[in-house]
Length: 307
Image (tube, rainbow, N blue to C red; front, side, top):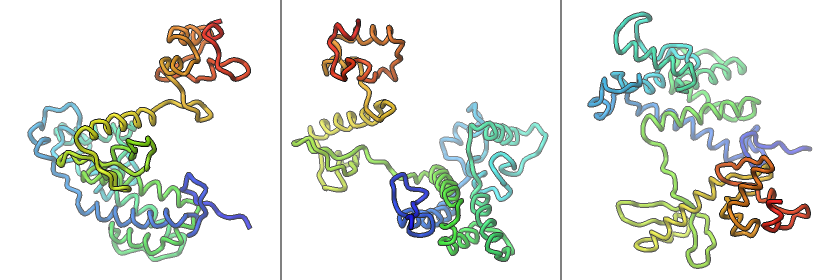
């Protein structure tokens, strides 16, 4: 019997509950709870900075008397992005606040703002569950009620062919809620390196600016003083390496200076001459080193690389 694979995993993991692995089934359950929790803390009132700058911005979101992204997230009438207004306003008028909301809607429809309504996301999937499972409609549709239904039916939802779409919607919605509430989880500065052996423990490195040190949450190592400065250089090198363009087969591309250092060519000028002659275009200043090798795959000499 062929083993079912998780429809969310990028790795080849077996599905344990329906079409999801145990990790993504648990993650889906926690996202539902987190969406409800984050919804309770939404505040449409602008920050003090926004109040001080009111009327001076060029964007509708900067001029509006409320935080429009929160208005949309809380909108009970929204049925799909851009299809319903994000709050009470006149259809045709010259009121400044109404014009701001209409301009914001235009930007949303044009794709500049991808906002979701909490009740629309939860309600659309809960409605699908009720229809397919022949469940009674609630007397009133609420965020708590729709979330509770999806949680109670989670194992059944996990077995449906559209569970990956529901997962994606909830992940996007939760990201927007956390962004609006300022609760987006902090990201680590990089991965833990060993300054003596050069090998990596691989754990996340967190920088505590107030304490003036950094630490790895896996091996518990800390850095301060001069070591902290050296760590900063290593983490910056990690970020550059992560952003390095790669060839179609995943192999890293090299800069002209790196091609020279590795013996592919004698100078950066030779790199550009050969690239020009072959009609090759760099990717953010990086080249595939195979462009500068001989037919047998060995490194070409400087003369070969421009001949």
